Image (cartoon, rainbow, N blue to C red; front, side, top):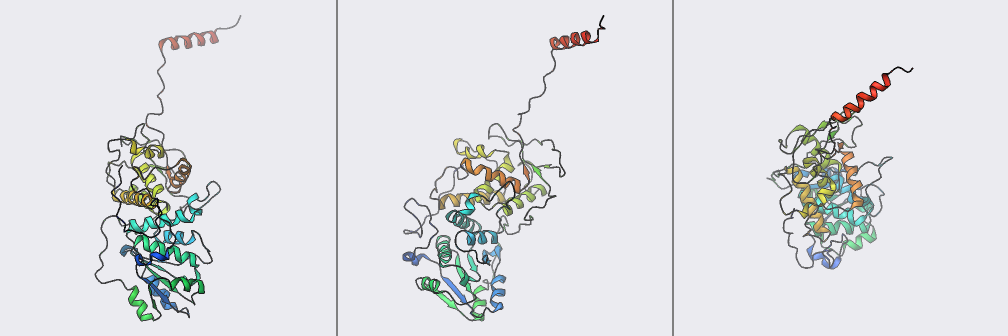
Length: 385
């Protein structure tokens, strides 16, 4: 599985280390690569500005508006707010599963955010109540804008703090403090066309999952990841019996497949984990088999539906942001992430199936065995003297 050639980046690409890894921290000396930044200011917190900002949230046109988590501080919280604005959610922790490890890592969270922006075609980002987020979070947003090319709008509903104002003075920007000008800025251009292909913004899977939600069986795991033959497994007992999942040779628009695709896109925020779950859903491969896909010289993957291709593209973008644009398999995950993939399967109510042919049929009794059994039964039936 060879990824497409990486997109060429200009010299001095912002935030790129010597090894090519993108660092989501703003570098002020590379401000010339920053797309235009717009700061909208309403010191009296006029609610009309918020209404216009949220009216500009049109994911199908690549325009996203977020309301940052109040008093979230620094770190990855703002990145998670953006990920949720893309229609994706972190799993709900319970007694058995905590949050995935990447959620506590700021750099990894921001790289995942950037991967989704590049994949989903996000062109405009609006952050409301930007006067309440810290200067380091502003730097994360600036670095994100510089790396992805998405235009950044910061709505300040109150006075801008001195530290943030000092940062603002170091970047080219324009300031709007008039409602008419702000409305014109947020108004999308006339004649915008809805993008073709998989409509990622139309997810309808409930989150968090319902307790009585229907579960599905994954295809049986093949012994060698070269076949996509699908054999339904017996339904296990339980209050909600799982249904067999249609094989990849079926129409991708099958209601079961569409329902599972919505769950994967809604409930798995990590691109690589989502792509792994999609492949397990469509092929039955185990996570370990997916990790070894690059070791085969032939093509190991069947034709995939558009919703799965989108996840593979996001995984490739994340590999590029990690400084590995030529990774032979962007879906290769370390063993310590495999429990997180299993957690993602659980969140989507997908039940694994044992490898095909793993259950041996009972052997027929031989004539010698039948003779021994008959003799034993006769001895037991003989009356005692």
